[in-house]
Amino acid sequence: MLALWSAALFLGGLLVTPPVNIDKLNQELAGQLVDHTHNHGADHRVWSAILCQKRDLYVYLPPGYCSQKRYPVIFWLHGAFGDETPFPINAALVDLDRKIQKGCMPPVIIAAPDATLDGENGPLAKNSLYVNGCSGRFEDHFIQEVAPFVYKNYSCLEQPSANVLSGYSGGGLPAMALGIKHRHQFGVVAVISGPINLRYSNCHDRYFEDFSPCTYRWAEEYQPCQKVSQYFCGLLHVPAKFFIHPVFGKGPTVIHRVRQANPTDLLFSNPLQNGDLQIYIRYAGQDNFNFDAQAESFVYFARKQGIELTAIRDDRARHTSAYCTEAQIEAFAWMGGRLPPAEDSIPSVTKEPPSDATPTEVTDSSSDHDIASKEAIQRAR
Image 1 (tube, rainbow, N blue to C red):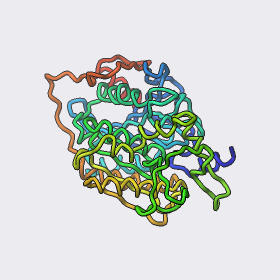
Image 2: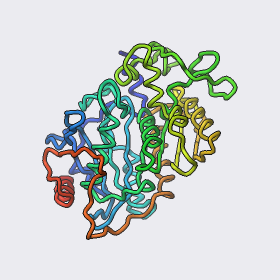
Image 3: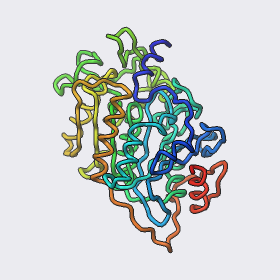
Image 4: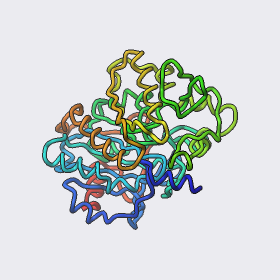
């Protein structure tokens, strides 16, 4: 347990952040942060019919937001240690808010949902990785409930080129996996030091060795006690089972289930055409989870298939909260040159969620788009 707490101090997911004063925060932001959580006293969570529980969600609205325009959307997926609570005070959000105000970044909406299994705050809360796994249908929850809720209650551009999946640390896996599987909905993916090849191994069966095409091998057996992180010269580590068991279960069928969600496997089972996704991958060259090797193996196989992408290695960086924040700022800058500008809405068209969406409810709101948006924004103010 000490190892897990120590790792949590360094990870991009980080420990749960104490509740902030939303009113004070919104006085400091040029945009508005809308609270659909139970982190600040009142319970404004979104009800999930698929998971049969209430779920936390923050929504950032850019400066000058109005329902007469439609905006690109970034879905910000948090890391495996922690939950959505650090989002309101993340330095990358503050930096983005200022750049939008100055006209250096197109105005965007950001949705930051909670990926934990039980929906309760905690630094060691188990992460769903947004997989339809043994603890619930979390991919379905995101695709059929979270995204449609954002589209319905806020004024969003819904074409793929205006929808981004951005994940850091453990959130990098669902960002890439959902992007590949649902490319008709999401056209841009950004991953910061994420586990995008869970089956990374080599002919020496040494997980922490650097990637080489000559020695690479697919992991064909699940080893629950395998060390997948090392801190303090290897004195503290996290075993694979901490992340794998809650999502993929136990036993000989684990590898089969991992294949179905592993982004590098998905390159083969759901092959991309060049241009299907705009992909940005940034990673620490001295990653404590060896996610640098995972990233480089993904990039290798993607480029072999003719997929163009942006991959940046920061040679001396490690897997820390500070690094993930700095890299996220750079990722936003990359997105800024690719996202479309906000567009005027067409008054005669009534926005509806995707046809395959499962309806969701908010504990304190109407389903009407304008009423829900106005009430939510009023709470933020």
